Image (cartoon, rainbow over all chains, first blue to last red; front, side, top):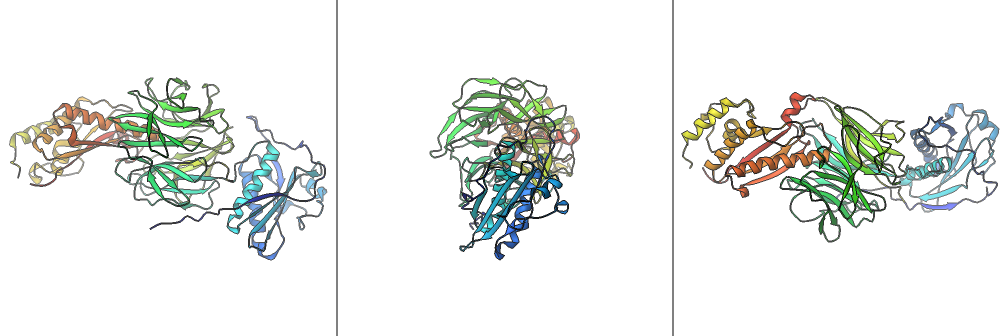
Length: 442
Length: 159
């Protein structure tokens, strides 16, 4: 039976609003994201103005998603509704800045929502620098189906975040992960997908076979994963729009740990034969395998650089599990991890500047980052078992899974800034593991 | 129908007493007359279907080799049997590395059995990494039992 997953596929259109072409503040209002202590920027988002009756149910919800996104990033602090002196009742009327200064909202986001003749939602927003008494950038308008209202709110958050930090946002994105249930010695696993904030969870597979570590294709339409449905671990590709799946190739051997190249045309993966595990590249269209490593040691968990030219992977060729970098065509590899302990699951940041990894030392697991030459290693978390980082689209946040110890131990998905701050759980219906974060949705 | 091989049974019993690393899977009465010699149940209860490994290691201990000697002996007596060797790891490692480690462990067992005369084409391997723990506590008592390679025999056809 084919199950279609109904996504809130939005035809979200951008356009500029009219008016407010007035002085654009170059923005003394700006958050610098550094490793130093940040005072979260106080902001307010009154309920979006419903410009017609059908839009009324969205006015509060849209504002709340924007608030949750910005507060959830750890960089912003909400001036609560109860403290606000006035609301916004008309999207185009001039803002009473004195009211917002009085409650110390430094940034004000106003919004409006209406339903158009085609039954679609039109969402508009403006961002104001309250103390400079002017707009920060132009207002924007989005049009989409009513089911995609959360995506439009996330797009507002992304725009606000970009203007106030100078960096791209990460809110309009998806996470594919493994939903787990049952006792530790009989765990059931299935692939699931959700919005980055845990909303709109949908299952992509049933739980009749062990499935592991799903990863998105660069265009977000396909998911690579490992499945035991044939009795061995094998890499599969699932199209999330059609729900069709197929084995990546039809060759023998146990395959796992797959990742797409940035151009989506090939996959790097691990193949175990005769007890030895090496890294191979597979052409997605032809299924042809090219061997990239040929060593009697374990080579696995490969990840491409954003430009597709290099691969970071883990190997125990030096006697213990460490991180190495080589050209994407194979060849000589240089070691980049040098601290005490074992390193695995390396993932190259979308900004190209850092590698995130799992480190095991003295019986503790950590999520960490380091530069590509191994310098500036920083551990961001510590627990009984933290594993498997994945980067946000803007390279500022990592998700990973944390498993608790003991007979009742179970995994949950967490996120943390690369500063190590703002560690929090990501809600999933049950246990969750192996998250992989998409790019920003178009 | 297989002839009951008393000689093999005696050797099996001696190995059973001598090896403190043997952990029969079921809490079953070790009176071998409960199971016919040529059955998977006998294999599990009396020959020993699993060997254990040290942390992050894939080398076979002397105890492991004794058990595998008995497995090879049983395979020699049961020429129709084939086996699937599962390699496992404990939870103290990352997922992909543990899959690779499990593959190495299963292969170490396969190679040893082949060296003891079992035809290679009777054996297959699979890795489960840390995905199928037997014991669920988070201490070495449980972890040591999870670092294992399990030989699952099947006897087709007849008896």
